[in-house]
Length: 227
Image (cartoon, rainbow, N blue to C red; front, side):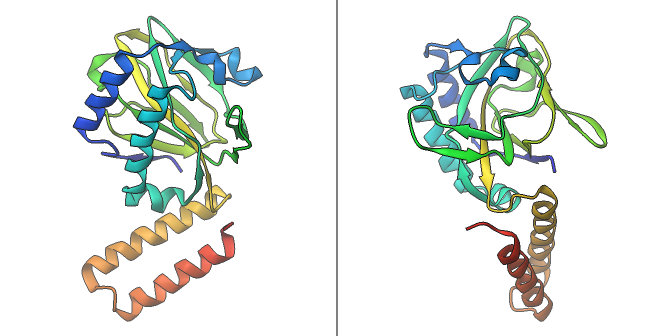
């Protein structure tokens, strides 16, 4: 499932992030690339663990906790600390798949990457190119969202970032381990939760059908989730 999550960050938060990023020192993005990805990756990145990355990562993490759509779709177990990258002057990231396991350098922290996230921090009109292109069984999907919006997609997907030929594409990117490993099961739970919320808006929480469907949702989650 590929999902657009609007308004993760406010315009004020985006402006603050951009101010911090504009004043920061950037490094070659290959510092976090695997052996295969390093052959395709050409961008710049805030150093992992830098004061700027930690500060902005805390902003992103706090915003995610306040996003019901993100929680419902991702069912997050553990989120990797957000990273930040920049593409300009023809830089791009060729077709690749994200590493199955992601380790936090210098720590025992590691996750299974079930879902990948890109949070856009530049408006689409600020740059040409830079589309995130995700391949699935229905073909390629191109994603270029307003600043503050995020896309969530399975980490198993082949994907790439097209060359940026004007301006700069800046974004936060990160991965998460979901409580529900299987994408098909996670999608069904998200669809069921969405339908329940729509029924709650019409009928209220106490309606017998709402209560029954809510029970089914939680029993499926209990069956499929890792605690």
